[in-house]
Length: 63
Image (cartoon, helix red, strand yellow):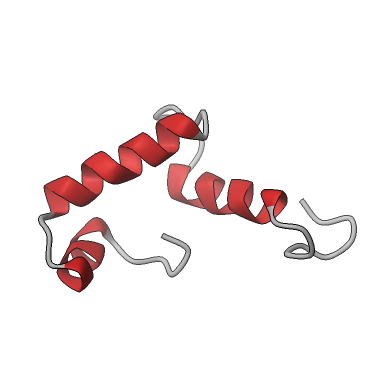
């Protein structure tokens, strides 16, 4: 996800279907409280949530 890969590319890397990856990413989005939105890209929001939860991953004052 953080590498910017599509579901299809992730599926190929792990040798599973893109449908399986879609289910897993939807579960990740749900656990992060990121519902479908026309205003926000959930992939980007998920990466930002990860970075905000990881000490030292963002510059001081970054968000």
